[in-house]
Image (cartoon, rainbow, N blue to C red; front, top):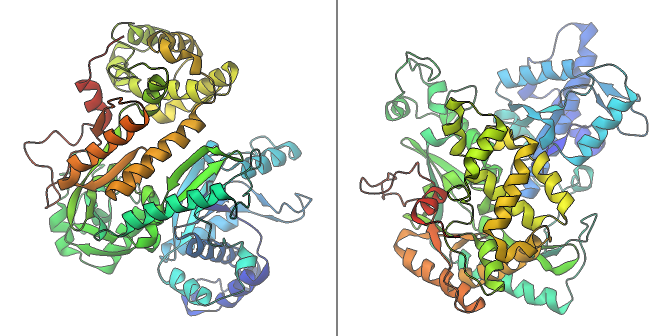
Length: 556
């Protein structure tokens, strides 16, 4: 689980009363068993599921993004002192989930890996595993569910205008423009009346004023860009008749336009919206409509409202600007529009590395993450990992990800030991689709030290959190000068204003770092007004990182 999900819990309080009222409502009519023997137990289990869906939807309204219910794939126990005090069988809950899903009342994200779950859930799992001796009791996966269709509307009706549900479901209140978290527990520190807090609040107000006072911001996603809803099918395939599954080796690729023409239905819009929300929970409450073979969202002003978040109880740590619009996935941002115009996204090249070099009075030449050409680390890593001939080409394409993450770990780690631990325990298989043996890290770190000798004193110095504070000041300058939408060290603006944004980014850095001429690169090529790539432009499959690496010579 993460910040977008809550742990399945035992029904209690006012939300449980709402769940009880909904049991006999029209939405659930026909879903309850007729056998008297099973009816009461079934009703209780349905009430538990409803309670959790109500709690999640209430939190969704408060957070302005989709909050899901995380259901563990093992027995669930109430954490009220004794684990055996109240337990709910997942088998029974699973049956209800399947029934609700078939009726179109909820949607499901199947089992989520244990490593992605929250520390609270891990703690409970470990404790339960320790108390239970049955082998395999801890399965380490959760399923996530959320209300859809008529059930979502019915819950919304109960929640609408409710003033005393908040304490029951732990609804959040509006957070201040500037947040300062304490070290250790990360609790919010009350700093509203301090002079520095007031100064930082003014920077947030300046940024919000410039970014918010823009032309209408929208997101126009082609249905072909949406993730699959089930298996390898896409929204228009699933509701279209006579369209072969793309997983079939003999099927022809579906024609989205013809599918959409046959299915301009509310069901298609709902499926497309649910597919979007899976990757971008913030879009849960955004207005949307189907236009041809695209789903178009209006990005509300509240999604452009920024906060600055500081941490470790210090105004010198963190400080980056955050807004809901940043939740649009990077591969979807090219489909954004500002005033109907296609956009471009510009990023600083190797920003934190360049900052460290500038602080040492040096200049970074070439790509900070290319360490294979002269040091021949690529072949050495291939040998250590033991890749076969067929795997080498596939893996080499992902080496830059490994090098980039390793260098960032070296800079952000607090000490030498924690750096190696972070490198070894990182989920490389999930990130690069290839494992990394422990033996690879020693030559990797050695190569990075050799390449970046001028800044090697900053390795495992915990410098990253302070560099965030500095890059947030750059972002403040760029956003207030241009009104561009900030994505930390990158910015989105109308394609016609690309030169203006590029000049502002380079000027802000040069003014802060004694005239240092930092590189600025596109993350993607702008689309045409029709939403396609121009024929004379670089292939959209080439990433910003690929273009940086291709365009920059490696100098040691």
